[in-house]
View (cartoon, rainbow, N blue to C red):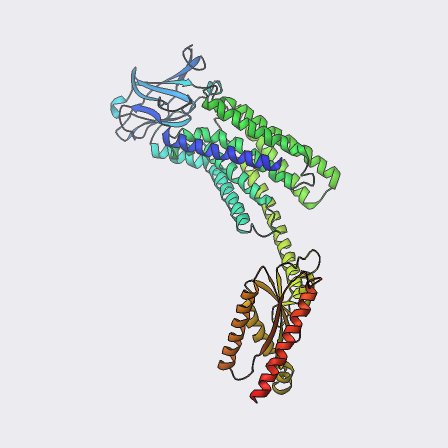
Amino acid sequence: MRRVIERSYLVVLIFCVLLFLFMFLTFRLDIRQRQEPAGFGEVTDFQREVVLDAGCPTGQKSIYTFTAGQLSESDASLVFFSLHQLVTVYLDGEEIYSMEPDPRNAFGSTTGCVWNVVALSDADSGKQISVEIIPVYKSSNDFVPDFLLGSRFAICKDRILAALPSMICGVLAILIGVFYMVYILYNRRNTEVDKSLLLLGAFSALLGCWKVVDTNAFYLLMPGKVAFSYADFMLLALVTVPYCLFMRQMHSSAANPIWNIPCIASIAGTWVVVAAQLLHIVDMRQMLRIIHLLLLLLALVCIIMLVREVRTVGWNSRLKKNIFCIALCAVGLVLDLAIYYITKGKFQSFLGIFNFLIYNVVLGASTMREARELMKIGMQAKSFEKMAYHDQLTGLFNRTAYAHDISGEFDPEHCIIVMCDLNDLKKCNDTLGHEMGDRYIKESARILYECFGDSGRCYRMGGDEFCVLLRNHSLEDCKKRIKRMKEKCDKYNRENDDILIRIACGYELYDKRLDYDINDTSRRADRMMYHEKFTMKQQKAGAV
């Protein structure tokens, strides 16, 4: 079921990304105004009149009226923020600005979140300004914008500075999430690294993107991009699954099917929200409560499983950290939602994302520290394993490794055993010393590995005895490798006059008609090797 959830979520994620790209490239706003923006101004009082109109999407519209003060050439911009609302601005009854969705948009009736900049001039001083705002959704009926007369640059600076804490928290969450994902992908082959950190990274990056896009000031940087208003809801819908899967991996009850509930609900809910939007049934914004319910369902499941974990496993340091951080995030999330509904989206709190950053850093650092400790233990284990299965002088596998490799369910079929012996090693030790004898062994092992190491396993069985185990190679290939080994020995002997390397070899292919097991093959190869060793000594004696 977990694999099905992961694949289903991946499909939803890819589809949402493609949908966002389509909207980003094609969706536009139709904005018309009389002249280009200029200058500064002053904030003025206004009167609001709510007019019932059956022709409006929510059955009503609001008209805001105020008088422009004394304006100058450099002081003539009216700036205000609209939240899913159609906007028309009149100057003494003459329309000078309007903003609505481009009729060529494939779907959707919302304008999204827009900063409206209306240009005025000194000739407009003392004239009456009327702003007609038609909400697209009922949730925007009571949203009253702040009308600002002044320099567009000054207003942008003021609003961006006010939203800076939220945007910084969002960007930090994205960077931390990307770091976690890159860290896991870089260490993907390391079995000691906790791969669940990848899920935490994905959740962090998605939540950070949502928080940045959900900040009003963001739309000052991306004017007219309706796609981001839709992305806001899609990102919030997509955060549930990776976080749920991450939490699942942290519990001993990871196999409990209750973890599937928020994942399946989130995937199904996302498809419902997107399908309803594409089919013109209802807009995403109108289904925001569904997304909030999915988040509450996730929180409920996490709380239930945390209580169960405490009862089953008991308290531990990691569980305490997790509970503390989750409680911190829950408080921030509840306060964010409460502030959102109380202010009707006008004020955006950053408590939730800030608390999550604390949670992300604490839990991520704890997970990475545990991974480093496991990696250290793993490296020590590998070091001990290497010492146990490798010859310290040559670096080749030892007799213990050979016994381990041919034990258990070892299949000798198509295996070739090559037995090797170093001629005159004892004489080298007696006449030149053990240091030169060790060099004889190491140089011989190097040549042996160069000829067989790319396709077989080389072992030092002890003293002057070596063995090579080849699998799925022909005897002809084995002969060629032995010939190459002899040529390397001759080349070494021509270039060095300190020691003389002479390696006797015997080789045999496992034959079930002759051999009961691979040890019988080894004994046959041994006999062949001793025969060659005897021949080489006779040739040396004859040469003398």
